[in-house]
Length: 122
Image (tube, rainbow, N blue to C red):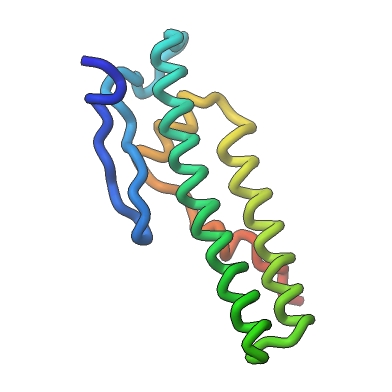
C-alpha cells in the first residue's frame, strides 16, 4: 500500500487534513525514508490547513476595515496576532522530529493557534 492510498482524512474546524499513514510508526527509534516522507506530507498538510485558518482572520479584518467597521489600529492588532500565531505554528511544524510531530498531529491535534498568538494581557 502506498502513502497516497493509505491517507485518511479528519476534519477539524472545517478543513480536512490527513491522519498519520499506517506506514509511520508511533515511536520509532530510527525512521525510514518513506516514513519521514509520509510524516512530512502529514505535517505540511496540517500546517497549510491551520495557516489558511489564520489567514482567514486577517482577511476578515481587512474586509471589516475596508467597510469602515474596524479602524486601522484594530486591524493592525489582528495582523500582529496573525504574525505571532503563524510563528507559533511554524515552530510546532518545523522545530521537532517530523515523525514525532506527525504522530502528535494524528493523535491529538494541537492547540488553537489563533489564541496562541494573542498578546499577553497584563
